Image 1 (cartoon, helix red, strand yellow):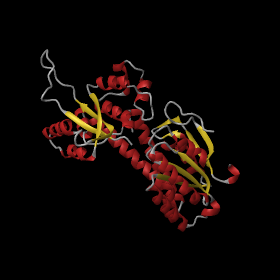
Image 2 (spheres, each protein chain N blue to C red):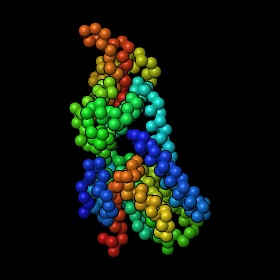
Image 3 (cartoon, chains in turn purple, red):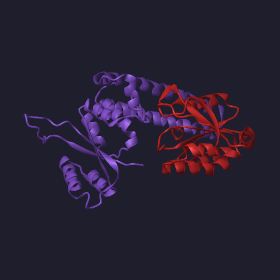
Image 4 (tube, helix red, strand yellow):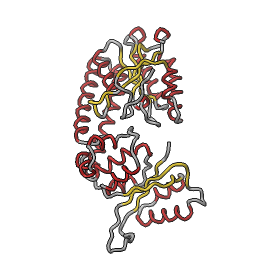
Length: 211
Length: 147
C-alpha cells in the first residue's frame, strides 16, 4: 500500500524501471522465453498501478466516503495498520501533519501504520482515530448469513434495521462466530448540554474476519 | 540458523542459507495458511530441483506476518537444463500457473543473465514499497552438497 507522496513517487519510478526491464527482456529473448521471465514483472507493474490508483482515489475522497465504501468489505485485523493509513489519507492528512497533531514522531506514526508492526496498543489506536474524528468499535464477528444482511442493505435505514436485528437476535440465532468486527462511526453532533444520538449520524459495520 | 526479526517484521538484511527443514520449522506454522504454503513448497521442490541452479525464498512468507498471502520463490535456471528450448518455456509457464493456485509465486531467471539476476536480487533484498529499506531473504539448500 502507498501511504505517502514519497512512496507514490517511488511507485512511479518502479513501474518505469519494470517496464524498461520487460522491454529489454522481449528485445533479447524469443517471445516464449521472454514471457517466462517477464510474467512476474508484469504482475508487479499491475500491482503498483492498482496501488497508485487506490492512493489517488483515497486522496480525492472524504473520510465519510471512504468509511461508506468499506462498510460492506471485511477487514482482517492484521490489516488494521492499513485501515488507519487509509483513514488518514482520506482525511487529507500527511503522516507529518497527523504526527504533529498527535504529538508523535513521524517515524513512530509511520511504523504504527505498518502492517507488520506488532506493538500497537489499543490506547494508541483510539488516540489515532480520535484525532481524525472517527470512532472505532470492536464487536464479535458475524456469520456469513448476517454479513449478507449488511451487504444487501442499500439505504441507511436498512443498515440500521440490520444492526437492530443483530443486536436483538444475534446471540439466539448463533450469528456470531470467532473473530471481531470493526464498526466505524462518524462523530455525533452534540446539540445541547445533554448528549443525544444525532439522527443524522451514520453507523457503518465492517466485518473483520480472523484468518 | 536464522536471526530474530527486525522491528518492521522482516529478517535483518542479508542472505541466509538454510535447509527446507529449517525453513519449515521457522515459518511453517502455526497458522493454517502457513502450513498450506509450506506443504505446497515441499511438493514443488522435487520439480524445481531438476532445473534450478539456486532457489531463493523472499516476501511476506519469511516475515513475522501470521497469515502471509503467498510464498515467493525465485529460481535461477540451470543452463544445462534450459538450453533456450522453447518447449521448456511453456513448461515453466505451466508450472507457474499451476502452483499459483496454491499461492506460490514463481520467478525465473537464467543463470547467465546478469541484468535480470541483479534486478531480481534487488526485489528479494529490498522492501518493494520502499526500496531504501533492505530486508533479509533465504537461499534454500536443496542439494546434498549444500546441506
